[in-house]
Amino acid sequence: MKKLILPLYLWLHRTLLKFCWNIFTLVPLDKKKVIFSNFNGGVYGDNPKYIAEELLRRQLNWKLYWTSASDYELPKGVLPVRPNTILFVWHMATAVAWVDNTRKLYYFKKRPGQFYVQTCHGGPGPKKIEKDCEELLSKEYVAYAKIDSKHIDLMLSSCKWQSNCFRNAFWYDGPILEKGLPKYDAYFEDLTLCREKVQNYFKLPKDIKFVVYAPTFRESRRTDMYKLDYEQLLVSLGKRFGGKWAVLVCLHPNIDRQNYPLNYTDRILNTSAYGNMQDLLAASDVIISDYSGCVTDFVMIERPGFLYIEDYEDAKQERGYYYDLKELPLPLAFSNEELMKNIEIFDEEKYKQGCRTFCDWMQFYEGGHASEAVVDIILEHSQKLSNH
Image 1 (cartoon, helix red, strand yellow):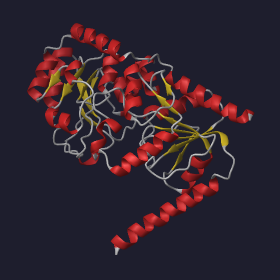
Image 2 (cartoon, helix red, strand yellow):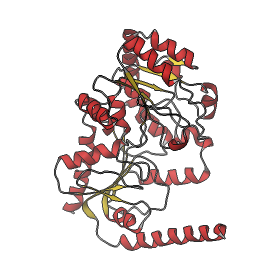
Image 3 (cartoon, one colour):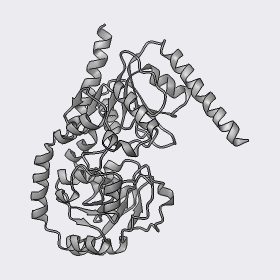
Image 4 (cartoon, one colour):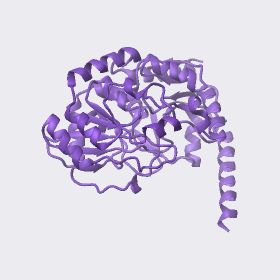
């Protein structure tokens, strides 16, 4: 019975939303309303968060809505709206601007005058994306992605390398704002405040140091390659860098974090409920990852980082890399034993020189003002509409 009822329900739901969307597009645009989305209903974080906060900082009295699939705290001035509801469709149909960090993989009807900012959620990482790994994507996704790209009015880039990547991989030939990524603005602020925020959230002592473990997802969604020896890691970090350490385990949103088999402790911390990954990265002294784009964050700010990939060849064959991981300054390990050795013999001066070489190749645009630049463009667009 469920097999018959569920498809019917979904069809009726989609039909209702399409009908409402077409009706709502007859209403004038609200030239001071923006709707934000992080992973189509995810927590208050990533690039959209920093753009929303810049709008709040300017005290413009705009209406800001956050696509929220569950209940979590939002700052005053940002209101939640459930995705794929009639209210969501109302705000999507009447907002002057959309700010997203992932594809719109559902029906939408963009109106003349609406401004769609696609921030993406990844940095200039090594794994191939979109068109460059099209053979891994479903035909449905590719079709939606091409439609989505036609509607984008602005993409944001961290560096010249990323701009070129977007041109080649995103089925996109529109404007790219080369002022950096809004979430990277956090690295140009007082990082002690961010560290204190994370320490207080997890109720940790003030002298604790953080290492963030942030592996990316595999297409299979498996996690059996995440075999990090957490206890030995804490020992090795203490030997090389001194002090007491805690591990912030930060899995990709595409992973079922609740079922990742790990016994968390007061020094091995599950961060899935924390929300904003950028806080965790900004607060951390060291990163351990695989081929996730977040590794370039630490290269950019010259903080120690290490690559740990037990399924290196499988991952390379499955997704493919834009550049060999050995070109990154982060020492590469294929086992826990190699990782611990890399930590204990870590050469900080050699690493920093490698970071500078890599950044020269990437040609970063970062300067701490990306959020301001995006908001300036949204306001300029709104003003132009008001003048006509």
